Image 1 (tube, one colour):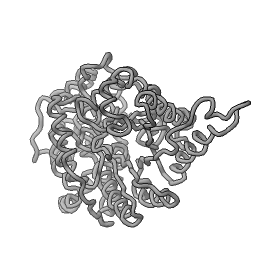
Image 2 (cartoon, helix red, strand yellow):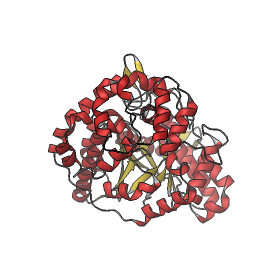
Image 3 (cartoon, helix red, strand yellow):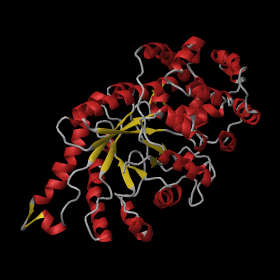
Image 4 (cartoon, helix red, strand yellow):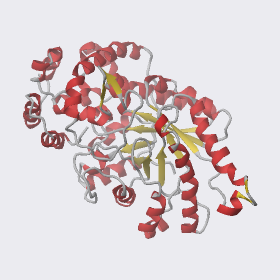
Length: 474
């Protein structure tokens, strides 16, 4: 069973879940969240994020201790999955050794499962490697576990072999899921996966495509089309190599980050039909009534995968000037983004995180916030990021792109609802959006709040109030 829904810890929610003991969830709350996602919402998988977050390494033991009845009936590692996202040592030097600790925890978790179930069960057998750019990075993780974590059990320690003293290591191998986040990585993802599979006999391979960071880096339209291009090429690799490829796509609540909200799941399924697993981030889980969330997850699970669509190269000839314009406009807004982002509440406890553009980007000596706060800040001043860069595209070009990005006009209509024309008084280069916005209905209450923020009345209360109107933080 390959999951259709992966619950994640992305902090894009406006409202605090009922079980949380603090507005910024962490620690014990996130243990409860795993059980809630499985037992109530019906998600089949939980990402456990070691990348940039303080998370509990003993999550498996605590789940068994707190919810024994549930996990005896529903086996962790078989009926439900817990999948760590680990640091990438090629990029995150300060967190590099945490990779070793995380892989050690895979084998330790299997010891808890053996005691709990009375037989060999691997509750964790896959890890996600973020910011993947080569097959070598994947192979390093794969062989680090196989050759150094597992094989060391046969080394002699004084008078005994290690496994005779502390027990055997299980599982003997793990699957490594690449997470592709940049334009180059997405467009090269098929070749990277093909190289990785070349010396292995795997039943299947999961591949994770980012949506938030590519949108932040290159603009909404380019991000969608890069992902769709990658999905088509990965489908071809699976057919040619006779290995089933199961894509995961990281979709959040805002259209800029995927527009995966309970009322829009059918549109997202239609946009990315070949995707196997969709991420239910925090806003999806907590910013809608519980029954709506459960029904939406059931709809996703009831639909079977389709085929990816081919995206012609001429599409990217159109998106290149669009991306250039998006980046210029985004950089011009950067000081305001940084200012407002300070008032966007944190919903998870995070470590300082430095990495690629999507995680930390230097602009005039200062870094932009991560994608969720970036998105929230722009919505809070009435400039939904979905709209940036549109001045580079004419109506004919938009119509052509909408043949491949099917939800383009729907997503733009959603974004224009929260556009504030008064922003052009402060940023005249956005005057073109004022003209475009005349064709769309706008939310007056959201406009009133963003107008106050534009005038300098910035506080967390207004940011959260605006977010509650549109149904997501960022």
